Image (cartoon, rainbow, N blue to C red; front, side, top):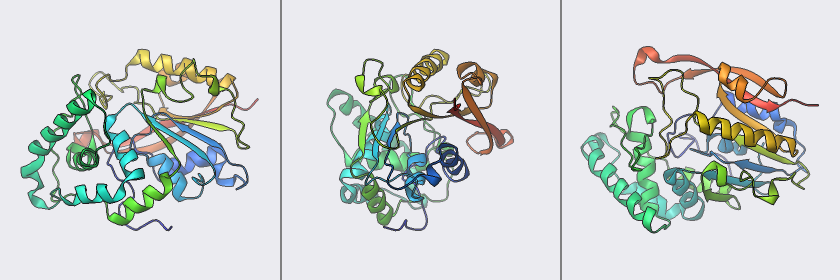
Length: 311
């Protein structure tokens, strides 16, 4: 199936890896030159808006028919979008069509956000797969300020309304296309520390028996640039410095067990402390920062792609 033109991803999600940075990630891992007869296991415990996985699938560097793909995230919103898109694209399309996408959407933002938070409360008590919830998550991601999803400590989505003349609704062709690529993928709702392969108690974290091995791709919330530049509130628990250190320790263990590592972060001294250059290769890349609320704060930002150094 050929990718439909227009919108490429279902959600606007902070830090979605797409285009040049996803291409570089594939090159660093050698996925662009991988033999088709070398299926691998792909583990992504912060899948977010699925930008990286989607780009690699679109460009033939991940093969959903033969690769084992494990996606997990602690955000109920992105988890539901991925799972409903995979299993019920027609129901998701119907729910999206029922929402307001023209210029009058601004009059519905507060009501739809409250409806979404009400459904979130219900699902924390009794988990169900909800196309209505997934559709609202997509709609809110496309209507909130700069696509910066924010959740308070109660687990409520509390980001303010953005300023858009109209909203872009993902077309039915995109839902069908993404659903076809996600068939067979394992999609879990889980904090990274309890996700498949990542949990220290799991015996399956040893090297995969897949011919292409196992790649663990990590795109955790970034280290804040300053005390006022801190956006890690995608889930109620947040992601602080202690979480960064716990993740780095687990990544080192997984690397020692023979797993291949791909990790995204900012080009900061703390990243080099978390992932020492004597063991990890830091490949810098400049990206355009568009998520800042103030226009003056937007511009080029140095990020890094971290991989394990070859012996």
